[in-house]
Image (cartoon, rainbow, N blue to C red):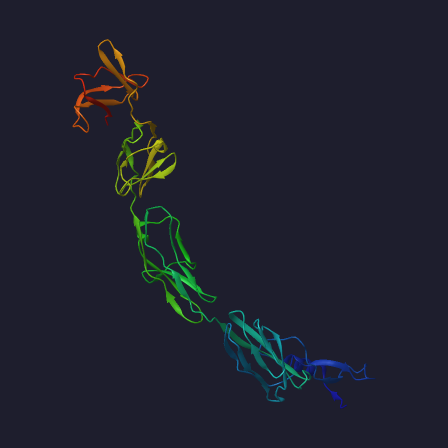
Length: 392
């Protein structure tokens, strides 16, 4: 082996210019002569992206950037060249292989990627065909794109809220990840709005306007439909001025419960014992029910709502007794006394007719007595038909 004499200062300067050179060993038998060294190439194993490790003068990797599709088989062959050693004869993957792919010793990346996203594939090119000799590590920018572009599956809905209330607009979507999301108001980006749901914890009148979501992945850019957010200025909540009043009924009767309230844009929701009930037509300040049965008994309330809030009415108790029927008539002196199962506090009309089916004429009106029984001597003419009718 040829010996080279190098002055220590010259050697130090040289090593600074060529950091990949290492002092392998001192010449045998000359340990006392510190200026005499044997130098040779030693190729370190540490990797630095784009730098050479043994193959001095490497010009790079071809191709340096690759795109593949998630779920679609791909095949691409890489080569690393060096001005001093030519083209690498075998290859291995150091890191960054996408799941589902492999790199052959010939430098061919094959397989079906199973994950989308950017990958930094680090390839090592070897001097020999058996992954030996000098080598170099270089990076390849590998992007695996999805097979499915973003698509909106549920559009955002228009929304009306009162000032200070929380407002949320939501979009449901599909598409291969990563999907970048961004909300826009009238085509201006909304700050920090990068989720499928846009939430304004305390909406203000200035937040009113049209909103839509932009969705981007590697395949396409799409937008949701516009959704209009309307933020109403502060509104006073409803105030009840007349409460609903309960009553006692006979089965088969009808009834109505009413309420009066001040406020704008009022909506009504009636409940019986906490369960929502309704009548014909949209819910309003009056609840109308016909032909009641025992199941209609209970405590009724109404909730009145607008953008300022809501208020609940007092409870109105409804009781339901059996149908109105006559008791067994009794003869008192010269009169026939009739009684029926009247409800205390209810008024009734006593009606008569010469024959069925009538017509019937009102003979008297009366308030039922305590205990629910009304006594009356109704006979004004023999052979007449009598009936009793509850009054509203």
